[in-house]
Each structure stands twice: as C-alpha cells, then as structure tokens.
Length: 186
Image (tube, rainbow, N blue to C red):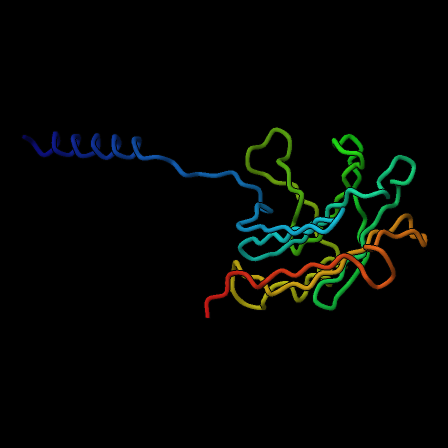
C-alpha cells in the first residue's frame, strides 16, 4: 500500500467517523433556566429560576383583581430577603380559568428572550431594570455559578396604584414563600 493510499484511507476514515458522531448543538435562549422550582399559596405562585450566572423570579396571579374591567395597571409588590419593589404585571385575558393569568418577571439578566426574525442564533431579550437588580441583590451569592441563596419572599398584588390589594387577607399578612439555598457544595 502506498503512502498516498494510506493517507487517503485515513482521511476517509476520519471523515466517516466525524459524520457519524451525534451532534449536541443547542439553540436554547440565554434565559433558559438550568433549575427551576415553584411554590403556590392561594391565587399566587412564585417561581425561582437559576441560570449559570443569574437568577430570576416569576410571580403568577389568578385572583379576583384580574377580572375584566379591573386588569389594567395590575402590579405586584415583591419583597425578597429585605429588598422590595413594585413591578408591572402582564395580564393574559385568554387564559383558561375563571380569572385570567397575570405574570411579572424579575431577572438579573436578559429575560423573555425570543429569536429575531429571519435568524437562527440572534436573541432579543428584555433587559432588567435597576429595580429588578435591587430586588434580586441578595438572591444569589457573590461568587459561583448555578447557586442561589435562601429566599424569603413576600407578595401582594395591587390594582392601579389604588388602595385595592390582594394581600392574603389583610394588611401585613401578604403571601409568603421560603426557598432553600440551591447548589451549594460545602
């Protein structure tokens, strides 16, 4: 066998092996969580999502304040580990329920990402506000990836900045949730 035929044979074998190996390329959005857990209390559900170097909190509400005529200007007051703020909620009137679904997202990085039209790898993401960054300041340890501190969360839903609230039955009660630390290796 000549050197040229051995070389051709090796190149052919390499090409064949390369083409037969499976491909693991992914096109997950930048806000795809590596871990997520949720807790519910009455009409409120809070979800904690953890990415490689970010955390996000989503609040879902299916209560009486989402009824037609009351939906505009719905906001959530959220408190996480001592930091709090007001965040607008999006109402999805077509959701199947007696009460439509309302959602608010608070994130440390881009969120609600979607592919730009006519592209397969360029993502368009909403950017976090300074209020979101403030709320989530103690949500994640300073160093490390795929970690989250314990979360003590309080939630109340407000209508149009008025005195109409859904706060779990009275002033100061609020909806309360506790998420344990995630990902620590001591």
